[in-house]
Image 1 (tube, rainbow, N blue to C red):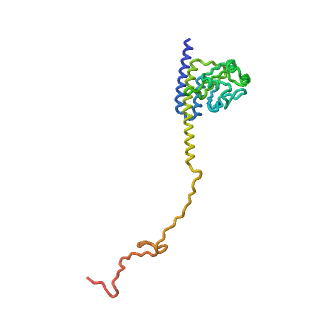
Image 2: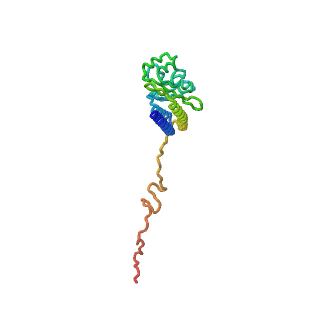
Image 3: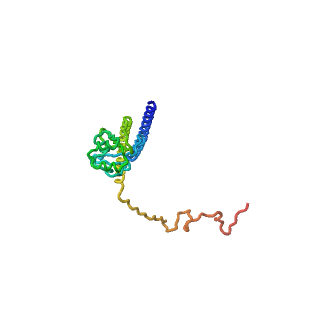
Length: 249
């Protein structure tokens, strides 16, 4: 009894640490892809899932888009990629009901989706044996869902459900923030492109013209060193007239 209690406490402490880790990492995630990477990794490792995926709802088209398609099986009978909201699946059921969908084994899956004709085809071609769908809620409205799957039957405990609901809440907030950032970034880029001209103006280089003096090329001002310049008098240039001699002391 004590051993089981200790194990449960350890698992609870691990989930709390995982949630704190997710909160810290999501604070640094700027894009939708970065948010999805954090959530799928933290959620999968916290509950021991084999696959994890994030699907976002397009409310105008009423379709669900899986952001990371590698998180869902590529097998016959499974709706993958971009699917209508009215196609039965763990993800679409979590979105439409805005409630967690916990399917612990294939028999429970058959009971949940009894109207799906090709369900046995899917089960015969997949290794998945348990599924979880968690709605992503923002202001009371579903914007998508988390999907986890296991390769063996798996029952989610109440403590794990509380953890997954908290993780889904963190994911929804981070996705809204990342979507806003991407929209603003796209708008800024579009505005910058609209301000740039379609073509850059051509610039003609004009050859510079050298200045010429009034007396033609090579003339310089007095005191210069050109051919027409007047040279300064040399010392001793003024001599007495012929026939004159300097006086003696």
